[in-house]
Image 1 (cartoon, rainbow, N blue to C red):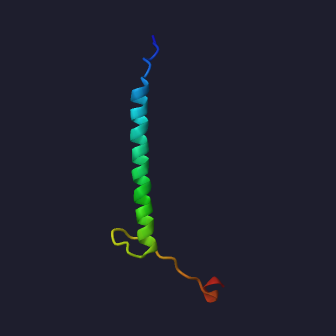
Image 2: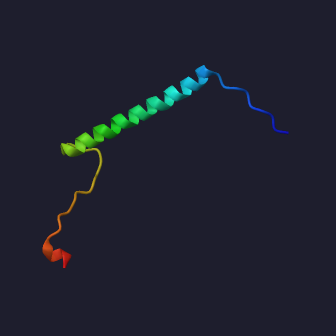
Image 3: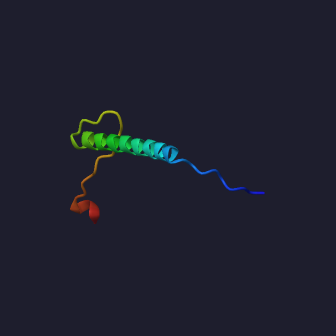
Length: 60
């Protein structure tokens, strides 16, 4: 038979939230760094496709 779960303390809850927020902040920092390197054209660690310009002849 199912029984109710034990209540989680506030300190354990806050520790879990702190870990989650720290991971999110780290991912945001990495994304910003990659974005800046792409904009300054100094990116060397990964490949990204460059936009191709279309001319009027290709559209027809």
